[in-house]
Image (cartoon, rainbow, N blue to C red; front, top):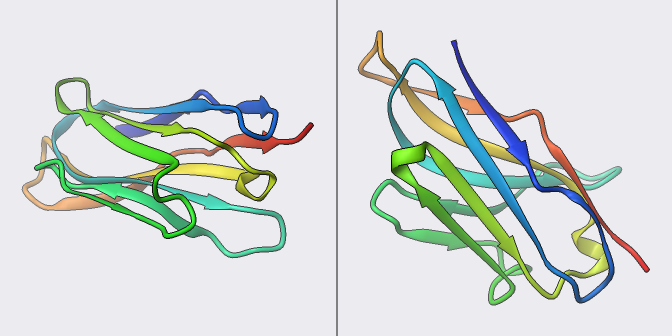
Length: 121
């Protein structure tokens, strides 16, 4: 059994900061790419940022220079530091990872349950 558990969401004022965490647990052999996606009410889920096992990162244009993705491979954890938050960043944020189970040699895509981020005064 493998799962991703997110934490760190909440309510923050415009211009504020939050840090999201997502930890993988269970029978994990290795984790390839990890990332964060978000879904606002009435909108499709969209990519926020991704990070490879080698540390290469990719960001949506809307969050560049404000958000930073990082990972601690020893802890099977990915982070998203969000600065200068705007009301339009309000969404449910989902963690995503390509995880190789101990019983396999091929990656499977996993999603976390989501954590709500609300930016409002």
